[in-house]
Image (cartoon, rainbow, N blue to C red; front, top):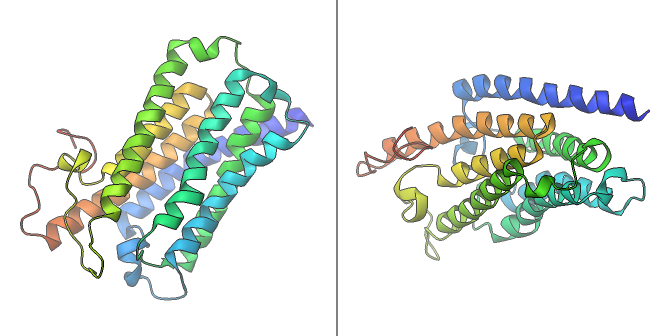
Length: 255
C-alpha cells in the first residue's frame, strides 16, 4: 500500500509540473482573474478575506494533520520535521495572518476561488504526505550545502514576500480607494517584489528538500506568478505615466 501511495505521489508531482506549463500558457493569454482584474470576470464573487482564508486553509491543515497522526513514519527524522515545518510556517502566515491583514481587497471570482482551494488541497497533501511518509534523508542532511542554501533562500524569500505585502497594504491611507505606485524595498527594482519573494521561497524549499514534489511546486509557483507579474507590470505602465521606466518585472536589472 505504501508503494502504491508513493507511486501516486510521484504521479501527482508529475501532474503538477504539467499543470505549471498549462497554467503558464493559459494565464499568458487570459490573465489572472482575481484582485484588481476581478471586474473583468462577472459572476459570483467571494469576499477577499474569507476567500484567502479558506483557499489557503487546506495547505495548513494537511501538515498539521501529519504532525499529530501516529503513523507519520518519517517525522522522527530531523530533516523531515524541519522541511515540513518550513511548508507549514508559510501557510500559517498566509492563512491566519495575511488574510486578517487584508485591507479592502477585491473579491475573488468563484471559479478562481474553487481552483485555489483544489490546488491547495492537492499540493498540501502532496508535500505533507511525501515528507511525513516517504522522503528519506541522511541524519546530517540539515548540515549539507544543498539544504543550507535552500533554507537560506526560503527564509530570504519569505521575508521579502511578507515585507512586500506590508508595503502594498500600507499604500492607501484610511479613506483612499485608488491605486498608487509601490515604493520601497525591492519594489524600487521590480514591479512584483512580493511574487519574487514567494518564488525565491519555494525554489529554496525545493532545493532544501531535493524532491520531485518540491520541484514541481516551485515550477508551478514560477509559472503562475510570472504571468501575473507581467500582467501587473503592463497594468502599472498603462495606468501611471510616471511609472519608473527602469523598474523590471520580476528579476532586478534583468527581467
